Picture 1 (cartoon, rainbow, N blue to C red):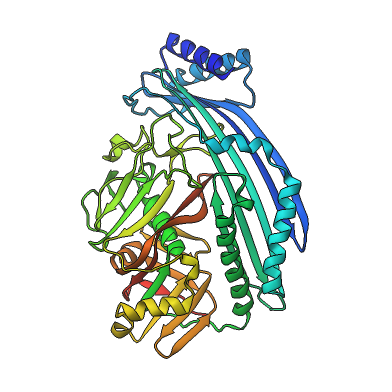
Picture 2 (cartoon, rainbow, N blue to C red):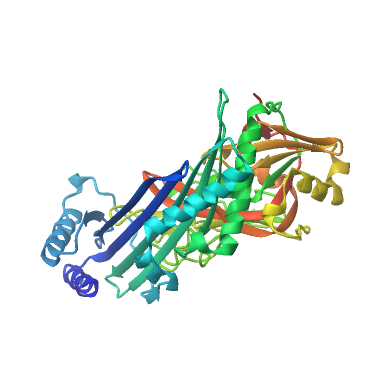
Length: 489
């Protein structure tokens, strides 16, 4: 059906002398939420439809969508959109550069897609109850919410130049929220484990990781009740891979998106500041679609293959995240980074999996889940960091944040703060981590451990939300910098 409809849309667009990007989407979401030993919510939802975007030879563009795949209404909609784009200038349509694109025909459908039809939500709910009971048994007195979500998002994209791209994005996750009881200000700590297969709740390796993270979250929520606030100031810092992902995503990722170049701190006069020094010479920031990742998307929503993008290469700006219409004007290479929440939305340059990489990371044997504040202190001691600094402040986890891309200032929230020294370890309530993104990237001194890229998030932009992910090495050490501060009480 989609092949016939897409081909017909292309034929009519060619006959009308316009460039067409036609996007069809079919999405299904299954979700189970368990609380206090019983299912609180079990749901299934689905959506489908197609979106039309056309470009005239004068560079005008217009979009429209329908929630079905009926041929006659679809062709009628195409005619109306074409007439709108070709209409008089009084419509307020702004001319845009129409790029030369390379046609391609490609398919990317992971094997795990077939298993989505066989998900038994009742079995999933029972499994989540078992996982909840295991955590409650070891950490009583904490409120838990455990959720499983299986999201299958499939796209078919035709362009009038002959492009025909089909891809499906399977996304599953186990998530936990642990909230302390009996406090005037309850603390909620979250943990998550992703995977592309709906068999995730029965995957021993993934489940063990989820239980480790969940137990740690529950204990931390409990212990934060009595923890004091931390004083404000600039300190030597250790951040984990999740907070590093937040720094890469919010600070540098959004600022590198080419549709932001009229105001981005990474651009000047609408052009990317390629070659400018923005961080430590041993630190880089990379974005790419990682196979099996929660935010994996192999092609843009314009049918362009997504490329691995080195945003910062050893401290210097190299490239931005671009779509066909903003890459040239922004002075960067086309990276195929456009993503859309649904067929109803216009694609925008967005991140996929973004990370901070540091040259010559120091060893951190074992799994990340094996590292609590004591083990982190041992790493710092062995590397001489606690000889260089009497105390180091460890910021654990990422709980959201935002950035002003025009100034390069960020404000993040962590899950907990630990003051580490040779004399002891002290837990403090979470506080704001803020400052200059250039100061933070320039302050990176050491990294410990291999790359870990499964920090999950949701990226919001212009009313659209898409999955995001990324990370860094297990831990990064940042030297004190006056432009980077930790808030107080």
